[in-house]
Length: 339
Image (cartoon, rainbow, N blue to C red; front, side, top):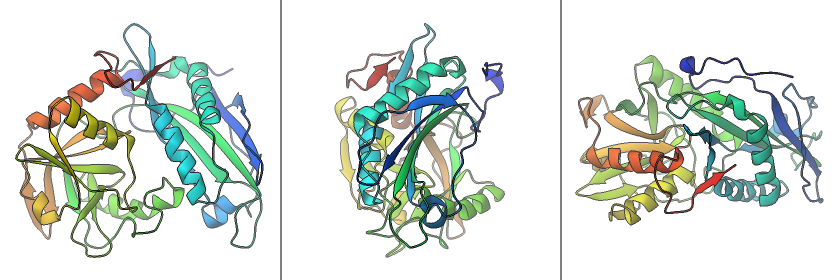
């Protein structure tokens, strides 16, 4: 049996093999049943599987935290279950039941609990995947589906923790069109972003900002995170039009800003020109949590939002959110599941 000899001080946001993974399968037309833990390892799949040929699959991203007292905390896992279920329907896969999803998450975290670093060093990243695993030459839904969860200890997504990052706006690539699958965590949504993201990193930027595909005017997402702007005490974030992923951290930030800080929230289209007039900007997601944006380059011009400092509201949102996630503060929203 694999044991944990990981140095948590050296963690980055990369994959590290752990003890086990969770697996269950479902035939088309049948219902999902709870699965079992097996030793982590490679899986066997047909070259003709629909996931390899047509990208029929989705994934989720979650984190488990360990407090100084040894408590193990999950942040809003039921929301990941709900999003995965909706995504299954959009991708013509059997809807994953919440009880099966939650059973899998609890089992994988408990079995690999010794891989969870202290909160000041990182978290246990949990990766559920649902995909068409049977052969199928024609463009049609698979006859069999597989649900797997694996996990890995990780460090910060962006180096430097809560320090402002530099972004560049893409004028050559789009993330997702309207009425497509941008609102689903489909596996095929992410590979097109590797080239523009990689190019941005080569130029010294942390990530890329995508504009809408129709008018190339309105901000949609930051790589794999949701975007927020603060102007005159109001929080503005792109509305969920179907091309933007309904992030769980996004929803959490909105509720904290509204209910804890008493701020006005505007979910609407926001142009890149309007963004440049904002007081603070940041992105939010499971991996990044909240990352302040220090500068944005657009059309060969760089707009500076901060010189290394973190905006007052951004920091308040980060402190409240992580206080709940890490178990150091109270949880007024009942978001935490303790194992």
